[in-house]
Image (tube, rainbow, N blue to C red; front, side):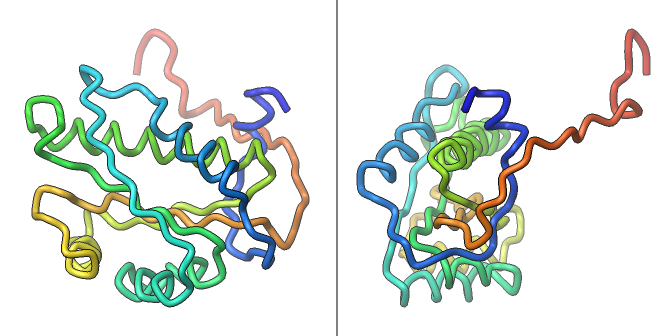
Length: 173
């Protein structure tokens, strides 16, 4: 699969089979996350990774009602931003840098035939503080989003054209 096909065939997967993700594939996913650009190469992202079902359920509870897919996932990854490591300590940079890392992991998983779904955490204070408490994180380590990974029950893959002409403004607004 080429890069464009990978991007255009990516979809959110919320139901997973019992098939385990190999350590090699998990490392590839994490390496992809660490390979994205970041402001001044500060790399403020950190990842909490788990396969433990009980912990996945606790994370799902902390992250709110739309986090049910975590309970079915083979791997959960909480993408955090360390504000002490962000360029100039500014909020926007850790958010952008950590989001790029998350998107790279999602695309790497898709290329490997592994499904994923982004489960938003930040900026909802109740969600990110619940996860900070669950993992005893410092205040400067903020959970941005939680990613659920697993092999999809529905293995259909299609390239979709989501281009919207009205969202493109040529030479003027």
